[in-house]
Length: 156
Length: 441
Image (cartoon, rainbow over the protein chains, first blue to last red):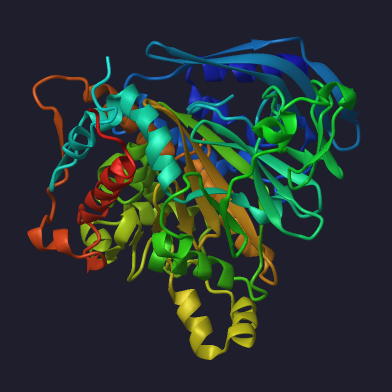
């Protein structure tokens, strides 16, 4: 998978197929998953809070929890659907091997009779590896991150 | 059909000594009566003065269905006004926060008011000559909330004319705010990092009860704590933990831990859970910060402040305080089956950035809509909200450790798993609901 835009589509598909271990393996060792509370306006994850700011350890915890039969909130289980607009390459560093992609999306999380719909832009900072790409940061800028939200149980 | 309006006898009968009726959680009529009575008769947390630092700064906030404005005055005082133009009722401000300048100007007909609500100007003034406007409420400017208390920058309101003073209402639980503010060597907190907002489809009282419930973590949070323990396995107890692990692992403590942490109830529904210790007691020590605290407060007082770290301190009916980490939760009821929960973080002046990081990290891990811990809580609250509709039993049990002697005492210190902390909330509920309620002829 040479085109990073294909990688972004693949990453979302793994989530929607609930292949969470395969998904987590896409992250670099120092990779982060970040959903800022100010959306696109937020400068960093330290001066203002976030809906989620997780390193691999916390993401692993989340994935392991989802597999636990006593994860009560997963009875019934949640399912997700990412509807992605084509990704745009926002930045490309030949020297660093990094590429930044912007992907506007609609995200739907369904559980039982309820559906939650969110929208925004995913910003992937990817780094080239011998076997393809890995995620240094997946940042989700929600349209209304700071408003009242219901429980979001999977990964946007 | 009304059942409970102007029937204080029927309302009071919903709270028995050791159980409560399901209508408390399900009835829309009772919710409307709570808005009219309970949230008017009690001192309700509105906001923090640091949200309006400069003259003209405001926040808008609904309390019990009434749109209010908190605004900083030119002389530094904080005023609370009803967010309703004296003319037609337009909300003067609809942004969440901002600065209104030196006066309010209604967007509809441009009536203007001073920051304290006094009338300033009306267009086409001549048209009011010879009318009764000046004598009428509409000519008096913006109505203000008369009973406002700014306690160490925490702003509370009592909407009803009659009722206890703030100090009489809160009593000893005020020590929890003191402790939180005193953790700043300069005695000053500011709200920082934004507010996490959750919509939970359950009754607000159920959420508040759970803040005083120590028997649920072992079973409710099993999935999150088992995952955390498995990931942390193999590390020595003395290994420095990442902050997330430091904050999540104690949720897996056993029944004995939670029982021994102890609890205390006060009059009017307030309580402190974790009077001996809590899941927050063993965060890593910070020598430089402790030195700053000793310099500010003296050796004895500094130790006293830092050693006190309750699980939760409840200011009934809607505020829960955690001195360590520096975080509060605010409960904003929206309907009988819908509640907004806010989680706020604070910066403490003169304290290291790590304290603020702890507050933000804790709120993010535990109280965010994307929390790794709260999903199971929220699922169970929503499950209870449905389950209570089932027939067969109209009552919710609060029997654990019931002792008839508790009925005649106001301040009681007890074990941490005693449902007295919840019974105490519901006794206060009944009292505040019927106070001032008229009796149907």
